[in-house]
Image (cartoon, rainbow, N blue to C red):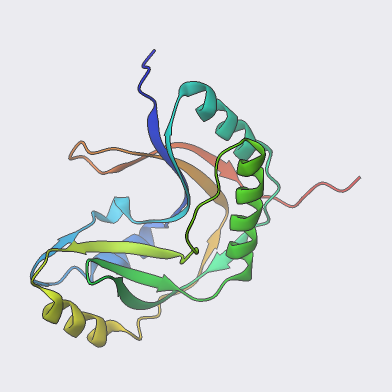
Length: 182
């Protein structure tokens, strides 16, 4: 059994049709290192390096959660600090509620709260220094991007890897469902 633990996060997978639509944006943008379509996702909560016992705690938490299915829609393109190119999401109270519920459950497991505001997005590319002008032109050309909505039916536990065959590996999928009422 490995002792090093795994670098994990809770996220949402994108349907293949949406991955393909977003992959069409991978144009000739100088200085861009595009994510592979299969790596596109929405991070809900970064967990960090967790040992096998903590991984099992997270598995149980996700298995028992009673989060209701909802829809999301890609809306707009932007960047963080001229280094990260992202596709945004239309405002979603359901996604925010899911994030809040997961945060509360994770705090009960003594996992510290995140210290930054949550800005849901899909990272498309990382931009090397010196290419800000091209990035700004790209964002301006695509800022009104709107893609079809899709239904979120499960949440996933991802492992972040760096093995050249996709950076993210799904360790588990957990269906969203209506809460049971007594």
